[in-house]
Image (cartoon, rainbow, N blue to C red):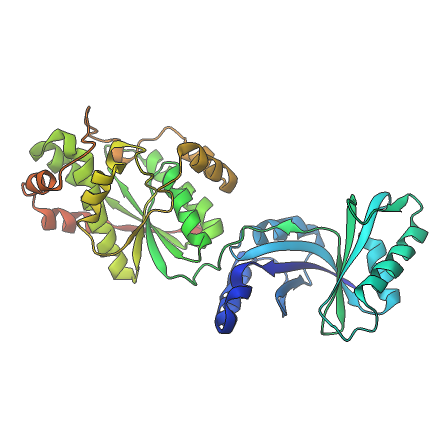
Length: 386
């Protein structure tokens, strides 16, 4: 009998003949999450087991598992043999000493000589004999002892299901470039796309010296928090202060943000093509700010050919904040450091910019030269070293 952590996956079981591929990526992600911790990872049909780990670090291991996309649920339990004596002993270990309970058996091994009902009755009867303060309640028990009889001659015995984050394993749905700012929305957008299996590369635009080092450090911290879910390995930054200066000097003030975002999209697309990215990801929510009207979004989309994914497009601010709190990015996001979008912010930004007017104003700029200058400021940070 040994202590194990039982991991069950979410949508992978729906993948038919491609299931093996998704399982392999899922296993790689689990190993990545548990890197640096003593453990062994074993695959069973529809499950994975973490075994041979330091039991004093069980809570840390569970915390890491809980952040791996693809995990439907996990349980801390015992792996034992399938004799009645072994099932009795393991059930006694995980069973509470008082309250109401029931035994719930699942038999993956249909050749096992006892039925699920027989096992429920025999193990339940044994536990009642061991703990007089227990009472059986098969409808609304306070506690449940679960028996999972596997095909390989072992049984898993546990007392609780802990929810995972669900979704698909990161790396099974292509690669996207997240335009990550220091705000609340973009880290949540990256989280949502990683949950659907997308590998997320992080790209941040800053306006030093108009924004200070504190703003950049804030984004680094957000990138690290997001990487706990997305497995993002690096953060790339580019300086767009010179672009903002040119826009401010030569173009209509109300278009400052609109024109800047068009440059950001161009730069992000160029970066994405360089690293094999297949789409851009933004934290835009329809109507949330002036640049996120349908006209503003159309203006930004007009300069790129890669798809732009906006997983938060229909969310309101409270919904986005709730997710940011859940994933641990909110407290960092609200730190009082400006990002580049607040530099040269016009008093009355265009809410419904006409594309023809935007293009006319942009014609006053040397777009390619400004792009090249921005690309030359690129810096790459290894998130494991921050």
